[in-house]
Image (cartoon, rainbow, N blue to C red; front, side):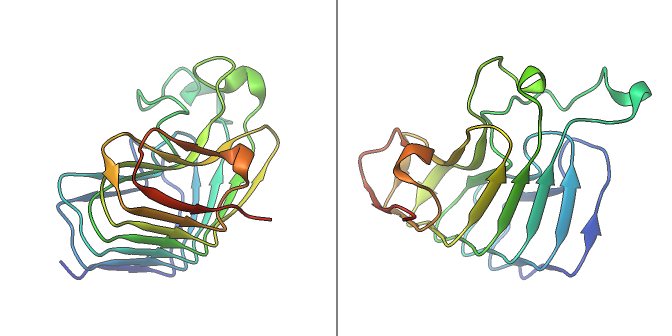
Length: 171
């Protein structure tokens, strides 16, 4: 509870760059994250009232030859951010997605930037995506409830498998 992850340049290779498990009332703010796999910010368990704000997520393929055969076992549908929990806020982040189409897994998929994989009353607002390929800026899984998505995706970049949500498209 109460973690402060702020002002870092995070560039390791690994399963995730930031991983939260059963984490509440924490702030992940003003970081530069540069990673080679989906799930750069990953959550599992019950995560409540966390703030993810003002971060720069840069996702590209592994450039170093000896590491190219390896990945973290997640595909690009998993999301750059994979969020589970209640009452979390993801706001004001910039996603720079620069992966060639032939490196996207599964082949032909539209990568997810923010995937809300479960939880109640999460708020996703004012996020921006710059990408070399078409992406789904926000994806809501079926088990989410009461998620608010405001100015974080165009209508074409938003996918919801849930029925209980609020959406205002980025103009």
